[in-house]
Length: 167
Image (cartoon, rainbow, N blue to C red; front, side, top):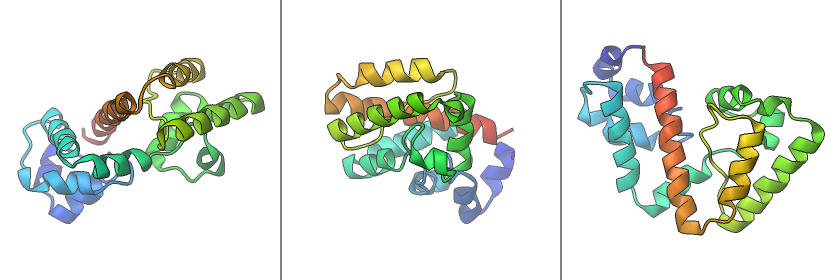
């Protein structure tokens, strides 16, 4: 898809095309649909990030909670979105040993218990070792730091996904 095609599409098609950019959160592209045309993919991304920033804490926490656990049960069951599956596979999370899977499960549970939402990391460019190191480091953060970091990671994931989607 090109940016021109996206800019010229109807609102419903625009939202459908961008529905996977922010995990299970079509409200994000809906919030920017009337701002078209976008002059670049970067401007589109910036507009969606601003929409998330302006949405308020309840919507932001909903967006964070819409993300799956890294190397979690959903990944093993094959119930992730196509985008999440590809990203986790690219980081090697589909090839964990049983003990590595158990360690991810333990870290996911510890993080979820501490913060009330899943650990989010833009895994492109990471491997299982760097992801586990980030998990351990971020478990020491406070809740405010982690909300901010999760939103920063979501914005990075969205940028990667937009770059992959739009030619």
